[in-house]
Length: 309
Image 1 (cartoon, one colour):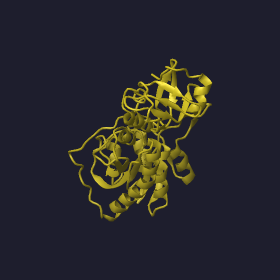
Image 2 (image 1 turned 90 degrees about the horizontal axis):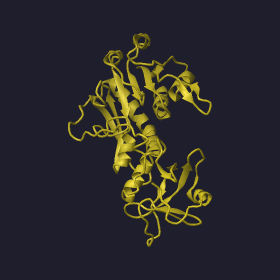
Image 3 (image 1 turned 135 degrees about the vertical axis):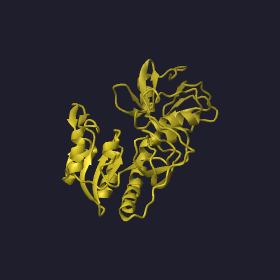
Image 4 (image 1 turned 60 degrees about the vertical axis):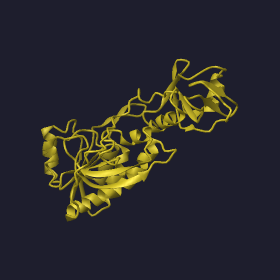
């Protein structure tokens, strides 16, 4: 089939590469417009845009999918199907109707669970033990279309959202190619999503990433892992923001600390939660590089009774 692939960030690249290596023909890509990046904030194409250029296919970068010029450009490419992974923009009906097999979205959850922008983060935040990916036909609703196939993935106790998303992106690429094969050969019948079990996964904001030290240890740990690497879990110390990396649940059995209270030794930094303390791994003070928590504590000279808030 003639394929126009839609996506923007690096997480979409495994799918684009898998489709390019399949019998299907990638005839173009659709991605978000160039955006400022790096220290100089120069305009740079998205990872999918760069990959499309390397493939030597047309790269469409509409500011709005409702732009009539975009509809014309996409129609000229005569796509049979448009697979989409993390494109980052709603697709209107006029555009959905252009490819004869529609748009096939790869979503990183087991739909109808965690519809929305941040399914992986919410799965970790809410303590799910299993997640996965779903290939489905895109509709105008938020991740509501009929399902073409699924795959499952266990959530490991130490997974960050970045690590889990990387695994899902690699495994989901095969699922997406299989869905395209099935549509091409007529061997797949789309199945409507269940009406029960719907949950929403809105974008995780910076405010959501603030650690609540009064929560029990398991909830603090989930929030940190869910927000790593983006937007980054954080707290405040001496009225300045401090980013917090992955935590270690191990702490001395006899150590008792109030929520947020710090205890620094030569080799470790502990902080109290609503249940038992955790050990900090790496931290990043505002405007500085990431460093080991023990090095940070020595530098700022944490004193008895000080706390994170």
